[in-house]
Image (cartoon, rainbow, N blue to C red; front, side):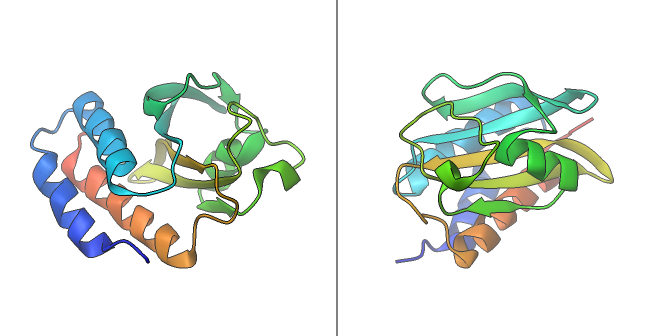
Length: 152
């Protein structure tokens, strides 16, 4: 059953009651982790230097850091500025395995205007966990985060 993403978007909008990027990114990670089934990691990677993502707020096991734009699913999302939805990360040649239990991954770029601020990364131990509806729903949640947060 697909989660009610419009309802989740309204709930996230109400939760993000500050413009602070750190508070809002931490709240967003916790909210997504608690609201969606079959996830083992949710977090932000931030672009703080050219062509490299740095670990930001997250929920889950300790994570990989840093991630170059040239590697992995997060790097591809940052490099192309397009959402990456992968059914089986073990089939991706340059996948960065932070948690060997992760099978599926969904990574949404976070843009401040035309500038890449970072990415929101969701991992699941369930192969093919993320559908097109999940992708659209998470992109909607990222849009709420961007609208409610000062990213500069």
